[in-house]
Image 1: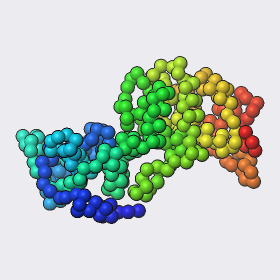
Image 2: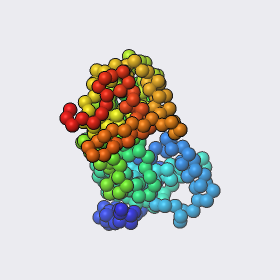
Image 3: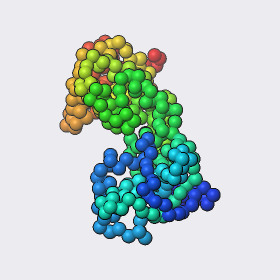
Image 4: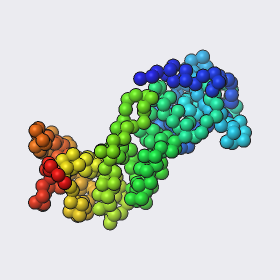
Length: 319
């Protein structure tokens, strides 16, 4: 894994300078970055720490990019250090100070796509970036798979909190890890490869969202339970298991079962299957020359599908 020093070394003297600028000319981009308003606990802690122990010598230098070419006036976009800058700005404003110069690392102008990618790469080394913030950054950077996910989610009548915010009229995904599961995206711990890796064989996005369409007859409030992590993740893993077993899911039958089971009821059933440690749901399937043991929500979804059908879910040599 590359360290912070190596990352910054990639930004040589021709690409950046250390200079004093007015921090009130520094703003975060709304489509990527750590949103101070969303991370209230961290921001409040940062503000209190600065208020009690502020020492400009110990203030970690923020990294910004000169975007004056886009705004036609002196302005900078924060790549790293947004919470620090905003916390300091708030404290200064409370004292009636609306202009304050301090040293920052200023990067030469680059496209918004490259700025979003740099944000993820740099911040992965400093402090873990939340999955929602990374999702938004990759989407802003124009990455194909992220654009596809947002487009497909919208097509099926859902929204993603990281992109659209929240709405009482439209069900939305609070987090994105279940979406990653459905899309066959696996996170990596390497900072230089911090974009999740896509495995087409694990991509069951279409199957998952086609299944969620079984609840279109419900209102937004009930469908919101259908957008919960445990429901989406479990349905995605069910389709992955079927693919692994070379089992062709009877779409009409499965959609009918989901249609007759409310999102709330399915979520409660899955939570019971996950929490039942004394008497857990277990299925065993002979897979080639070994036995595959299926537990928890995976096993519960298998039982849910198998109940009431003669064509049980099992390993098939051919579909």
